[in-house]
Length: 163
Image 1 (cartoon, rainbow, N blue to C red):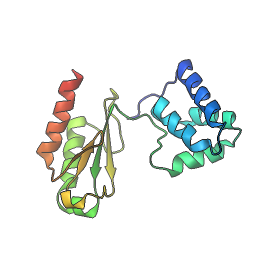
Image 2: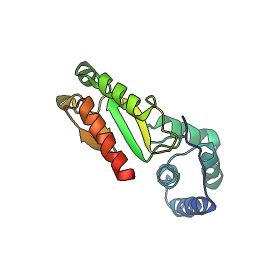
Image 3: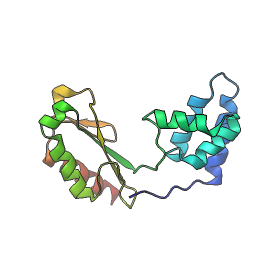
C-alpha cells in the first residue's frame, strides 16, 4: 500500500531556496537531491520536475540519478523504517522468519508502508554485520542475533510510543 504524496508551497519554497544556494557551487545536483529527500521524505516525479527546472537539467538526468542511488526513494516512507537483512548469513540463521513475523504484525509485505504511514518494511541484502546474524534495523538501530520475539517487541514498543 502506498502513502499519498503531498507537498506544500512552503516545502517547494524551501527546496528552491536551497537549490539557489547549491547553484553557487559546482555540482549542485547531489546536494539538491539530498535536500529534497529530507524536505519531502521522497523524490517523486513532481519534485524531480521542480529540480530539473531549477537546475536547468533534463528530467531524465534527475530521474536517472534518483533511481540509481538506493538512498533516494520516489515513494513516501513510513515514520518508522524497519529493514531486515536477507543476506546469506542472516537468511540461514532465520531472518526470513523475522520478516514474516513483521509482515504479519504490520499487515504489509516487504517494500510496503502501512496505510497510516507509521511503518515501512524493507528486505535488504547484507548489512555487513554477518557476525550478528540475523539482523534487522528499526530507524537505523541495529538488532543483532535477533529472533521473532525481538522483532515483535521492537514493533510493540514503537506502537506504545505512537499512542
